[in-house]
Amino acid sequence: MISIGIIGGSGYTGGEILRILLNHEKVEIKAVTSREYAGEPIFRAHPHLRKITDMKFIEPDLEKIASLCDIVFLAVPHGTAAPMVKRLLEAGIRVIDLSADFRLKNKEDYVKWYGWEHPCPELLELAVFGLPEFHRDEIRNAKLVANPGCIATASILSITPIVKAGFVEYDRIVLDAKIGSSGAGTSVSEATHHPEHSNLVRAYKPVMHRHTPEIEQEVSLKSGSKITVALTPHAIDMVRGILVTGHMFLKKEITMQEIWKVYREMYQNEPFVRIVRDHKGLHRLPDPMNVIGSNFCDVGFEIDAHANRIVTFGALDNLMKGAAGQAVQNLNIMIGVDERMGIGLTGVRPV
Ligand SMILES: NC(=O)c1ccc[n+]([C@@H]2O[C@H](COP(=O)([O-])OP(=O)(O)OC[C@H]3O[C@@H](n4cnc5c(N)ncnc54)[C@H](OP(=O)(O)O)[C@@H]3O)[C@@H](O)[C@H]2O)c1
Image 1 (cartoon, protein in one colour):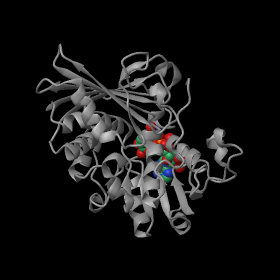
Image 2: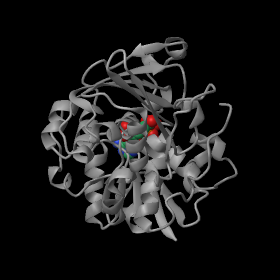
Image 3: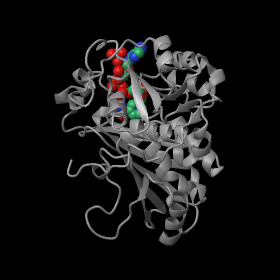
Image 4: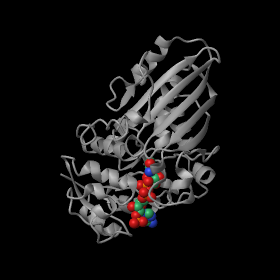
């Protein structure tokens, strides 16, 4: 059995890692931290886990955690994770970091997009971007996995086949994202106050969203062409889920068969990417409703001959394929078990 620690275990992604790993055959959870809930049972923060575990939260004491665990998940705010990752790596622990602190390869991008100097830029090269569909071989032996952002995962998986095929202009890729409130974590703010969040469709970071550089980094790397992305996310009235709609402009006329071919080539053997483009029924294209609670990312596309455009869609559960589910997928690859272990279930329907 592999011994696991979760730092930031009282948050939404920490809770989701717990929900999955408490049913995982090959791991044992040894430490779950929360400063607010230290000494209290897990169900105090995660009432759905009552009677599933009698563990209690502990303080985030890194020495103690390093002495108990083989692999540690960090589910803490960005900026907070980096110094903890450094200390855990020094203690010989493998780390899966759900924050943004090691996703970007260029340390200058942290200044530009996050507004701070990276405290340990020497570790950026060591970190493997934790998108299994693109980096499976590197993840296997990684010491540090930087789990991708939620909007980034839906964006990268949905647009890369088209970009890699060279069908579209590289400098006019527009991404419109819709995201539910759990994407903001458990901390309370005016924006998540019920009267302000109910019934809303609100653009919250119309330009310079922080997932932009990781989308550009990964799509450019995979496609071999440097791309520029214009991303605008909107908060909408749901709790879980993301839909990213991509607008790209064709360089030449293409057929639907050609598009199917490039998506199939990239994803036909991927356990957690489904191509959704049906010709009838309500669910012809990806919809977050159909992935909630699961680790799937559904991707789809449509040609707009009138505007010389191709429209793509990527839907996922931000706490699953957008965070905890993907983190466990990475764990499974790192420990050499079936990638689907603990995350193979479908979502629930209706939601
Ligand atoms: N929510 C999503 O959909 C999503 C998706 C992808 C990635 N992520 C990333 O995953 C990370 C966690 O997100 P979340 O939504 O789970 O956040 P959250 O609900 O706000 O939880 C944050 C957790 O971190 C702990 N924490 C905060 N500051 C800490 C510190 N200085 N030292 C130790 N523990 C600290 C908190 O517990 P205590 O304060 O009690 O210690 C809590 O357990 C973030 O980096 C986020 O950007 C989130």
